[in-house]
Length: 271
Image (cartoon, rainbow, N blue to C red; front, top):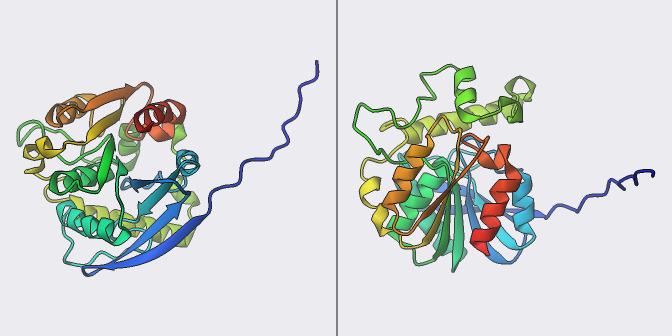
C-alpha cells in the first residue's frame, strides 16, 4: 500500500511583537507571542528557548511574554544592575508596567533563579511557577561543588556537562555569522557580570525559598552535569509543596533533548 506523502505544510508560526520598556536605568526588550492567559518565560543564559518549538505550541493557548535579560538581545545592562537579585526588582517593575495578573512563570537555569528571586519578594501578580534546572542556591558547604564551573572547564567539557547527547545541541559556534558571534559574546559577558561573584548563586536565597507559596513544578534532566538531580531535590525541599520530576536522557536543557516529555509535564501542570 503506497505511503501517503505529507503536503509539507506546517501551521503558521504565531506572530512575534517586540516592545522596549524603560525601567530604572535599563531598556528591556520584550517579545510577545500568541494570545490567551499570560505566561512569563524567563530564558536561560544560553537562550535555547527563544526559537524553540515548545514556545510555538504554548503560543497557541497562551500569551507568551519573553523579556530579554539585561545585556541580551538588545536589552541594556547598566551598572546599577549587578546581580540577579537586582534584576528581580527590575522585573517586578516590568510586571507592573505590563499590568499582568495571574501570570504563570516558566524559568530556565538562570531564568529559574530569577523566577525564585521574584517570587520570594512579591508574588501578587503570579499564579504558578515552573523551574527548569534552575541555579541560584548552594545546598552544601562553601567548598563543595554544587554548580559545575563553566569558566574553568574547557568548552568541550562544559558541553558534555550540559547535554546527555551533545549531538542535540543545535548551536554550532563556528557556523555563526559575525553579528551572531558578537551577540553571543555580549550575552556571555553579561552572564559573567551577573553570575560570577558569588558563582551562580545568591547566598541568602536558600533561606527565602520558604516564602514561595505558589504551586511549583521543578523539571530536571536526569543527566544534568551542571546541577545534578540531587541539587534539584535540595531545591524542591526548600519550596513548600513543590513537586520535582526528572527526565531521562536529558541534561541541563531537557526541553532541547526531550521536548515531548518536557511538554507533557508542562501541559499537565498548567492545565
